[in-house]
Image (cartoon, rainbow, N blue to C red; front, side, top):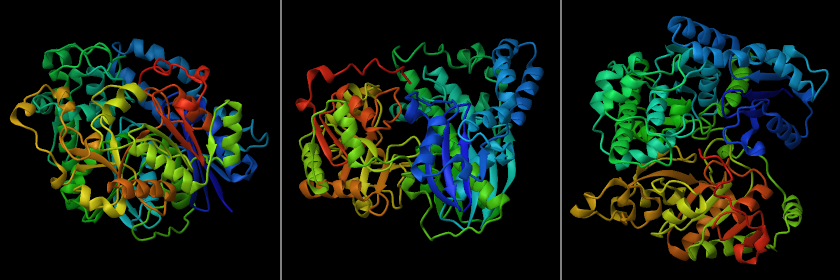
Length: 612
């Protein structure tokens, strides 16, 4: 047996994963334990959880892989500061103490922390692949392809911001790179910052806001901010940005170009300008990604594409690649951000360095539905519920499914905590909040009274895979909620001329389809297909709901409030349930109703977490 522990940490979304003899055993993010969104700290709790789940000690681990090369990243920081001196001195002064105290001596830091689990831990077990190789490995090795072009896009790793590689059998070679400061991830983050959202957290809000606007500023972006070539390569005009050496993403010249200042905060007014900016940058990113994709297919003549890196979470752009039919098939790593680097680093060592054989099953990836986190037995759940003084009913699985489907039918917001926790940013029916997609009030209820977040944010549909073609235009598996496509024409309700003239967010109140709670203003949806083999209990719930309603779709959003990580334990789930307007909780084979709980157990969750 060869066991490999993968670790990502110290930037954002720290995580750990375990693979044994090439099989992905488990993977989990540190934030699920610490309750700190995007926690960047050493993933102590995640590592301990993996070992407990697998009944292993650290001494049983043969290799430990950290997902990037810290010394190479330090080189990039120093060179960037020197090139921009003296302008970058403030940023330099803020960054250096952390590097000189901790990050520069990362091997020693990791060894010290790992020795707390095993005093005899040998630092020679540590390996440090490059950041984008870890991303690329996370995309190719779990994919269902023998051969693929592998594209990674994010903010920045050590130097690379974009890479192209070729994966064949058990080998992966990086062939091309674009380097910092040229980065479409940082371009998107700059607009995120400009629109008043938090960088490395609010980018998906920009994507969700885009359909409310028109791409009025696309040409201004393409003519001033970025030099985009026909092959998709690009350079950013640094005259407009401040991220290379400053403490903000954009500068005054950037603001003057678009005629508006940086939006002050999340709480300030969202105007049509902000929506149009979101639409514009989204279209620019889509154009870049499509140009790159066309070039890659033409150059390498390979049928399959794998994607990873934070930009690969832009499911609207992913959907465009798919619909253009550039490649025969595409596969996207569900934990495409830095958390997935832990997995990619470990898989890269197993295949690339140790030269182990890779067995690919046709049309079946090796991610196990991304249900790779902890699972709780009914005994463990009941123990926590008793400690919380909760009132509950313990039912059979069939009874639990029946009660839950009835709650959904009655228009209630349902907390759903079942099986293994998902790895990555999406809730996929393991730690989800569910609702009836046919309800015209459900989107507003979930956004304002359950999630405590902006009203414009869309919700995703979960659908039985076997019913997909009757409800959406998408014609392939989408188990990880990483593809956007339109709802079926027969389900659309066309807006009137007057309705189309409404101010962006006012369109929210217009019923646009037979499943309005999951239909965005442009008739699109971020679709999750549910498969019996990877999540049988969620499939069973959707089937029960379909029998009652003839609708095989549910609203699926992550089980948390705004600013909170997805719930990790039964206690987390109960507290979130009691702190929101959720009315029903199904956790294992236990069901709980809000009306049955003691008033004293309720708490105000609206202001508990810092806004994301």
